[in-house]
Length: 110
Image (cartoon, rainbow, N blue to C red):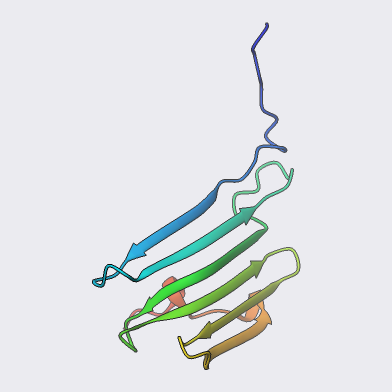
């Protein structure tokens, strides 16, 4: 039919997620950009690649930090760099993804 535009699941674009946080001061804006990528493997639920870059509030430091994170499930690689506003690297991790356990929601409950 005219105007019928079926989308093949293997070519459907993956949405890009963008967050903007406005701090107490009106002159400060913090944002984060994330991207997820999949390619035509039927039944694959998790994205093959996940990239996040931007500002994140550190509750431990009570300050905004820059977080660059990349999860590549195909290459079994996890990369994360957390940087303070002055450029000091606070945390850097480059390891196989299957060895990156016990972090975030995977932390053991105390």
